[in-house]
Image 1 (cartoon, one colour):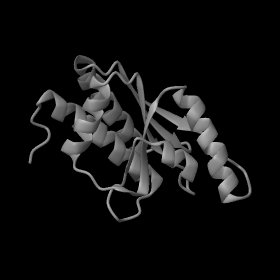
Image 2 (cartoon, rainbow, N blue to C red):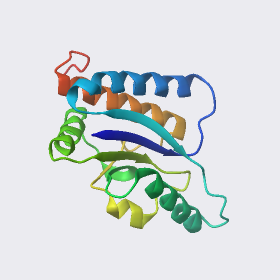
Image 3 (cartoon, helix red, strand yellow):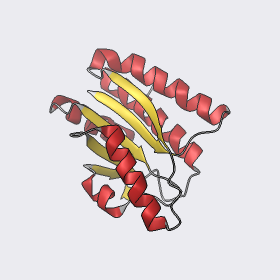
Image 4 (cartoon, helix red, strand yellow):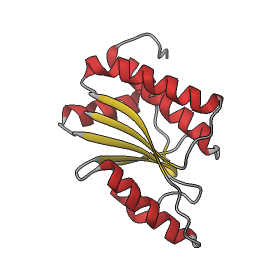
Length: 160
C-alpha cells in the first residue's frame, strides 16, 4: 500500500521541515517490510481564492488530483476523533490488509478542509482539542506514521 501525507501549503525550510522529513524517511524504511510500498510527503499549493469556501473547494480538488482515483482518505480535522496511536496503527494495518492501494493522510489549509471532502474520508482524526500550527501538525502526523509502523512491526519504540 502506498501511503501519502498530503499537506496544503508549502513548509518553510527549518527544523520542523527537517523533522517531518526524518520521520517520513524512518516510516518509509520501517514500512517496506510491512507491506507499505511507499510513504511520502506531498505538498499542495494553497488556493488564492478570495473566499474561504472557494479556497477549500479548490484545495479539495487539488488534493483529489494528487491522491488519484480510488485512494482512501484519513483526514486530520479539529472535529475528528481522538484515537490512540495503537488504534491509528490498526486502522492503517486494516486498510493495507483489505487491499487499499493508496491511502492519503490529509492536512488541510488554514481554512480547514472542504466539508464535502471531509465527508469522503474513511476516518477523521484530531490531535487533541488544542489548535496546532500547520508546521507542528505535520510533525505530529509524520511521527504518528512512524510510530504506527513500529507498532505494526512490534518494535519497542512505542511504549505503553
